[in-house]
Amino acid sequence: MMTFIIAAIVVICLSMIAVIYRMVKGPSASDRVVALDSLGVSLISLIALFSILVETSFFLEIVLLLAILSFIGTVAFSKFIEKGDIIKRDNSR
Image 1: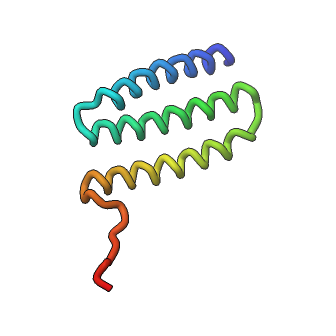
Image 2: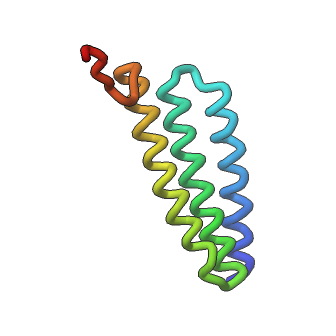
């Protein structure tokens, strides 16, 4: 069981390297946003596997926090790419 978890951690680390390359080299901003979201998912799964490996549930709260931050970040970047503004302000007053 431990060897499968360690092998999964190694595979996820290798995929994170590929995703970081795509995030830096991406041809467009939307590719970079997708790569950033994939990096967040990979980090969440890496922490979850580490939590299983050390047999503790302490890291699961960190996983939930990272999932929320990753979702909010993806929505904010997507909205910025689409409209050029994240928060619409009314300056007519």
